[in-house]
Amino acid sequence: MDSNKLKACLGILRLSMGLIFLWAFFDKVFGWGFATKPADAWLAGGSPTAGFLQFGVHGPFASLFNSMAGSALVDWLFMLGLLFVGVTLTLGIMTKLGAYAGALMLFLMYLAVGIQPEHHPFIDDHFVYFFVMLLVTWGNAGKYFGFGNAWYNTPLVQKYKILA
Image (tube, rainbow, N blue to C red; front, side, top):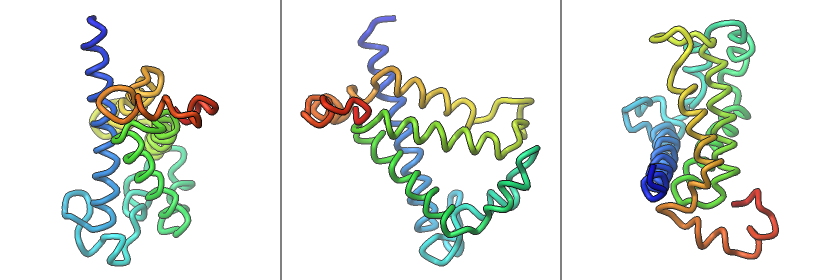
């Protein structure tokens, strides 16, 4: 594959994943009516994790995830994670940290659905997105269609490569 086409695909994948995470964050905060009804919005007093952790988990880890439902700490960590991953991937800065954090979140969500999703014996969107996050990280996708090139050249990032 032509390297420019690969770079374009990596940049588009990074932007897409960033916007998916940002959308999830804002929909849960404001309840825009897609995945979150306005009455269930975080600003309206709803828990962004309770529904999924109470009713969406299955399999061997279900009781563990059920026990986290409605926890303020879990809600804050989840929402900060969505925002961090969304911003870093959308802007193309700190993509390694953002994509690794996103991969961890997606892996945990994959475990929560019970490693046996509803529409396939073992593959669901969390599984696929997990590997997209690894590709974003390992492909240095922050350098394409974002602020990544300027960010990579800062003295801070040159000294601490994990911030790339």
